[in-house]
Figure 1: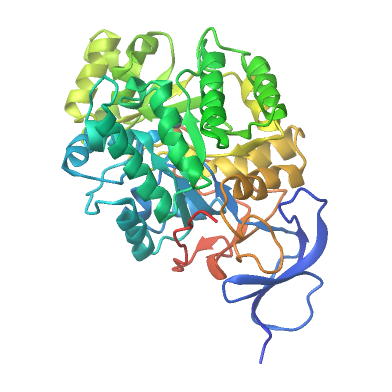
Figure 2 (figure 1 turned 90 degrees about the vertical axis):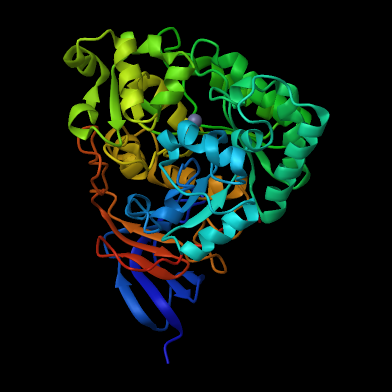
Length: 492
Ligand code: ZN
Ligand code: CU
């Protein structure tokens, strides 16, 4: 009888820790790695990885697949780019907990980011159970999203909570942390996050901190006030006593170009005095969000000056989808603002939008930062989503390792594996090491690439040959299998 279930033989092992690649094999039994390096013995199944890299499966620390992992558990766009663990509940947005008040608010507030879904669960624990029962192709870990908590308790009001409301919000965060959430996320440009003062966030982050969770934030400003907003996130972590993750770190929009030259040393200084602040990035110069949300927070004015594409719509695909807002306005013979309002009305507030607002030098500077992880911020919506949904992980290797040489392959893999696994307390994941979970990706470092485009985003990255999730082969010779071996990963 064979000793192992699976051996991936004769590849270049990049183990996720950042140490230099070495030749070797990986042996797996059940859902665990049993041996790495020289492997003797046989397996029921063997994969020849000659000429390829064997690495831990990638961890996408900034996903919006809360609904997708239940609605479309194959999550092909993730598994085909080598992602074996998806972190959801970001930006204060999510699908649980859900009472009737939240259900009624869901479509207008979150469908442009998460896509549409029924919300049959009530508690976070019930949602986690629904994820497990859906058997997604990749693992899922989750934040408790502050925007969801506030909508459940207070609805969409612009005021501070009463003591009773704050207590009720604490209870919902506590519930989620007990169920295994990895921390609390906020989206402070989106209502109701935008209605929330620092004080309330400190109080709720304390509950996450008590359970060893972190505070993760889409900060209040990523433009010319980005320094204040970074400062607020650090302050919340410091006062609540928890680690901080600044989501999709960037400086965006006119007036903010180059500001990452100031934010990164500022963040490093906080780390030096003991606050555990890390960041993540998606490697593109265009952002993407809900069109309704951007419009409501006054970004409509920016559409006059910024190139923006309507990415996904529900009804009038021919008329709107994949088109620049300027072109839509010209076709409708309307001013930009009125054109956006018409699109929103015709599409019941569901569209997402792509905005070209960043400078490549800022993106590169953030990618290179030693404490920066990779998070796609992919929006699993209909139509033509931002290509980051399909290509984020391959793009880091293609662009920053192979083309520009600003990262070593080992460093790029570390950013996508052990760094996030440690920070987010994902248990025995993120490294190729005996005893850890068998989440593995096998790719060709010379050909791995992001080929998704803004016009045609739904394209799988070439160069990824094999993906293994909890010991099950999820991608075989470059094609997705029927394996759906993902699990809900609770805080380790
Ligand atoms: Zn965000
Ligand atoms: Cu996000």
